[in-house]
Image 1 (tube, helix red, strand yellow):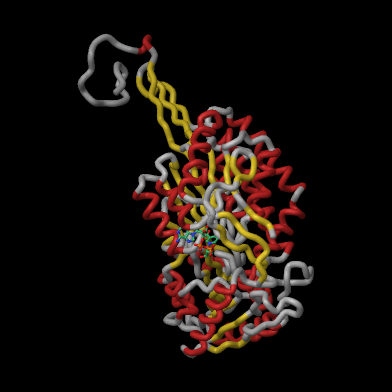
Image 2: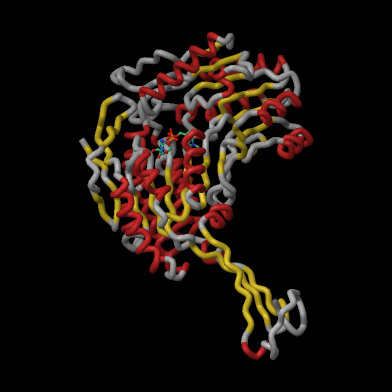
Length: 503
Ligand code: NAD
């Protein structure tokens, strides 16, 4: 049985709290270890260390900080097999999927390697006689990251490479369900040459999160997780005067126009709805075919594909998707399915009660496909976070747009069509943060920014890309004049651009 503690000052640290939580292998349902749950006192100690480390780190030239990021990138690449194995053993996703998320995380490190250029700021000479103005971006201080179970490597990597490269110190509070991969990555970051104390991992639950949000030495927090917790974190953190970005839940629609190639759409939906057992905030969970003919063809194309899905533990290389994360999550998904049937939706493919030989205690469920779902049903309104695709039939393109725009979430969406006018209209009018045209999961690359609208994001900044740089820095604007430019006598009026004075 492994015991996962915390990572502080370049090494593991047990902390003083006696509280722990169990870690499970979702493919067997058996406990494989425990994780420490930090107390407020533990967190406060780590914050003090991070605060102290910030002083020298923030003054380290960006080009030197970036050398560590280059080393870190190389270490992640050369250890990717071990990292993927560790990740899948606690999360349950397939090895190619685990490697995929590490790769996407590495892309953020590569973006962060360009930070000297991105922090350059702007300079204006002679804004008044003898007066120059320049602006710079400076690090905030101690940043906290609070992350979900579904991308245990990638989502933290959305945050700390940019944050550290900007000169902040960072404390990560990963999900207590699959914390091991983060601990191993922390060792690699230390091996890359990061000074002690600049990056820490604190494992824990609500107590640790509240301690981070209440500590006056923490300047900002990035959160990714469910909407109810994200909203709470945003409210508590901003009430304490901190900068908060909280990326939250989703219900992503894919609109299928009558001119789309149904075979291509069905293939795209298989990956986007059932990949990683639907446990992705950018999973497509609602398909909206426009017109009866499109809908009938789509159901026909999907049915055989969903029935053919191979569900198996990550140790089986032929697996398309693994189990869901916990028994509680499985029960919740089954509850949604029962409610969908009761409210009159047609369950075309029923993946419940799936038994995987030798893994009878695992949290497995097969792909589920609902037809004739209506917008008043909970399977449409709520985020299920499982391998369940709902087909909501729309009579027109306008009905599809109105449906998406009135949903409470606005994370991702996509349209499949051959018509440029329709695609352009969709990208213009849709009220969603990330939009795909013939791309089912429009996750932006690292040098663009990731984030949703409406109740999918609280705060002003999206994550990584330039939005990440803005979130992790203060803007400072300096106006300066040297003694030779100063005229004699006091000035009491307020004006700018004068050729004699500046104000
Ligand atoms: P979660 O909200 O349960 O947990 C997220 C984090 O919050 C974890 O670190 C957890 O320990 C902490 N937490 C849980 N309860 C808390 C409480 N009461 N007080 C303070 N902190 C608490 O989310 P999850 O189940 O781990 O992840 C799934 C959710 O994450 C889904 O809703 C999914 O859509 C969302 N998600 C969103 C994005 C995005 O970019 N929008 C990306 C990935 C996942």
